[in-house]
Length: 107
Image (cartoon, rainbow, N blue to C red):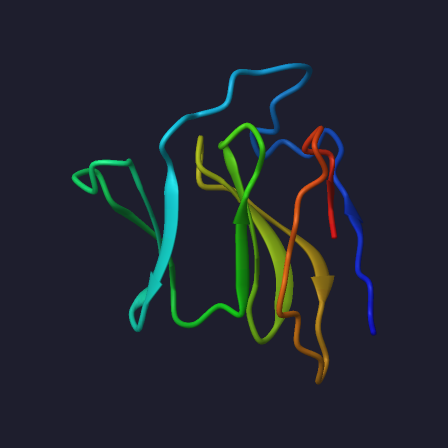
């Protein structure tokens, strides 16, 4: 079993500092075309990534998405679209990503 933990800091990708209200009703889903986020109604969908992902998770505040693909574990901001690579993968596969409750770490 491999455990990967990425610690988030002041990275400039739109990380909420301090207690923030959650963005209610955001839903992640994947199709053959890529990873999407939508509101609860399904009317405001936005494609985040093209191609397959192995795992993805919304942050507790709902403003970041952590995901793993065949090359890396990354975080993308829903606020400004910037991304940060937490770990490069070489011949490994990450099947699950999860956020800490304070949104400062990804495991």
